[in-house]
Length: 93
Image (cartoon, rainbow, N blue to C red; front, side, top):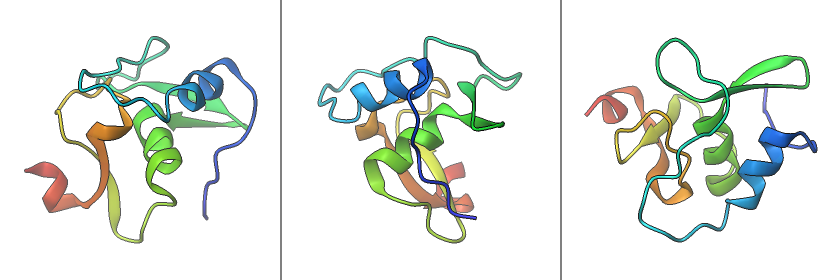
């Protein structure tokens, strides 16, 4: 299933407003987190990871076999410049 972000909720709005962010600092997720230190939110009846949602907004749909990777290593970061699609081994480096 391909997930295309849409909607007007507070979390979605926060992410959309920061899609063009050009700063080098991490943009830390200010809302709910999961037990592993990642930002999360409910949208359209499902839970979503904030960094993955931002990666879709910034880099397009998730390619098969890849996951959203933080270049900065900070699980709460949603800076679009710190996020990219990588394979699992590439993400673990």
